[in-house]
Length: 211
View: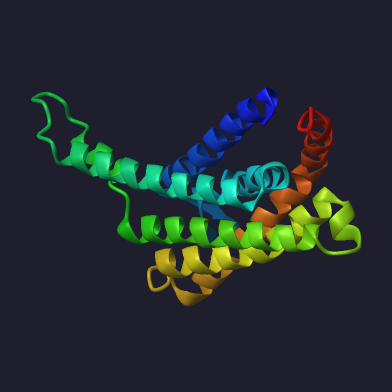
């Protein structure tokens, strides 16, 4: 593997793994979008699909799968560390224990939903991406076509798993349904908006990957 390709993989893997942890922290907050309760993780989570598409495009499904598993394990480690730190006795005079526990004491349903959605949807995204790449027609020729095509299906699974586990029964059903639909639409919208930049990146990297 060329030296440049190895270095780039390190950056891709780091961003992919970090994005999941950041989205889990951001998901703690529900923000108001014209009456729809939306978790903060939707702001950054679509980046995992963009990076994931680039990884599977240039490094293959096996390496992409390993990075997904690594992201899962690192986030499990982070959760364990946060809970241990919360359980440690607070120093006298440090009055932020409750605030710290509120932020880093992840709601179990949100964490379970987030991690399962991440693993399942990204694995599905990679499988569909490679099938489209090996298929005749526009998907075989266009990186963006297969990136958006695979994401369109993967985001459905992601929204279904996360929203169902994290918020079904917590929010009124109509709010839950509105949030799930909005999360899907927003995730796809982000990818469509950034697809021209993603296409430019993929095109610029293609030559260097075979040096």
